[in-house]
Length: 499
Ligand code: NAD
Image (tube, rainbow, N blue to C red; front, side, top):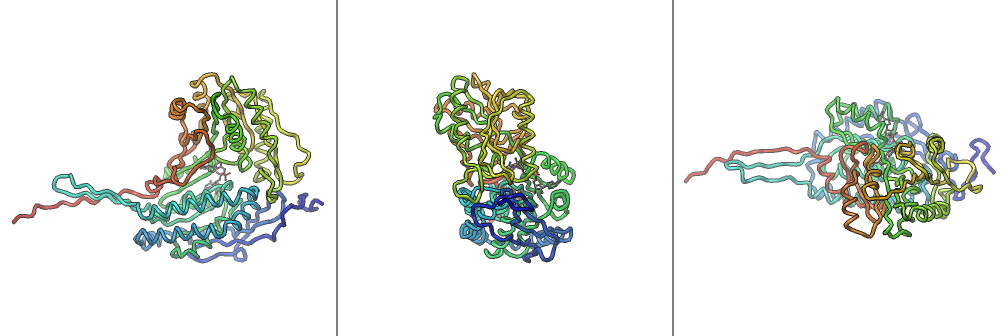
């Protein structure tokens, strides 16, 4: 029986009572009882699942002032690397301990299928584990060939980092930033997306439990234009680390540019998967289908364009379509579900708008018409566009849904030109058994990451970086040390000692 108020069908898994979360400001938990409340409803069921305390401007000031105080006091920064590593590593253990709980929060708030979400939380554990190792090796250099002087180059933490993150991978993206910044001695104020803040707020409690000193990390929830922008404008933040849309990234980049504030931007993408005729086509078809439906296509690295060698195009498109049609779309709490709903009604309207635009532009759209789809919730079926021309919006713009735009190519040069033919440059997939070809194409692609014979593999050791409109700066890997530190040079004149 659908719920009379929301029209939602009852969920397969038991629906818990709505959960209240607390913000973390200067080691104090600020509860929903003390603030206006931001409510989150499950995008699959319509039921209220989470309540967050909306940060006030005073909260923002308290959080940034606490981080500033700790950065200036320097207790965290001057702590031995081994001790910082122990605390950051302890957070990894606590996330691991609570991974089922954290996974369930994201399943309810984002609509991620319960079967895969705990593995995704495991990705956050790995990031915290790896970042902990950097706390012991963010050292600088020594120069002793300068003639009469000695040069010491230090890597100093940038100071207070304001972190602004999107709704699609809530804990994972915070975990691409926060542990790395903490490892090198920075302090932070984190503002997760107001749509899906639960796991970031729960992380705040875990930070306290792990023994992070008061004020070093603060986590507050609020909207972008007020709290997010306020974080960027605050005189207390030395750097903004942003992940989100290119539109907001450009706004934040402009603002930080005016203030001469350091900024790192991880933005959108329109990633191509290039499939050559000599590839393992079964494996490629499986990963192409996976790459465009993971998180219902709501991933920055979603492989939303398929460039396929003309000789195998019909056969390969049929293989991908067959897999897409088999994907089980439904209640994210059902362990059999492979793809859940989109995050919101606005997101569904956006995806449907792109489908209409593609059809109006003359492309052909095929998707399974499935009478079994839950009637409530923001569900869509995965679909494939053929007859796509490079200039169409479905070939150029980030749809952020499970929609694949297919274009055949005849030569390697054509494949590279098509792949590079958008404003973005985040990632690409490449499928071939010929490693000479793989290197030639891989090096010619204008993308921060090129995955060869795999897709969405990733590892904490490997940097994530967007070229062109996909971003500025990089995160993850040992390169995060550069991202969150400034160089400081001490040059010491050594006078000759006689006698
Ligand atoms: P968004 O840009 O709308 O919002 C991201 C964050 O910015 C949210 O916390 C939001 O509250 C805040 N924000 C919004 N307006 C702001 C403003 N004027 N000033 C300061 N903060 C503001 O993005 P979204 O819809 O949450 O996420 C989807 C987008 O994120 C997609 O474009 C996707 O490609 C991108 N993304 C990129 C990566 C990456 O690593 N490159 C990873 C995940 C998502």
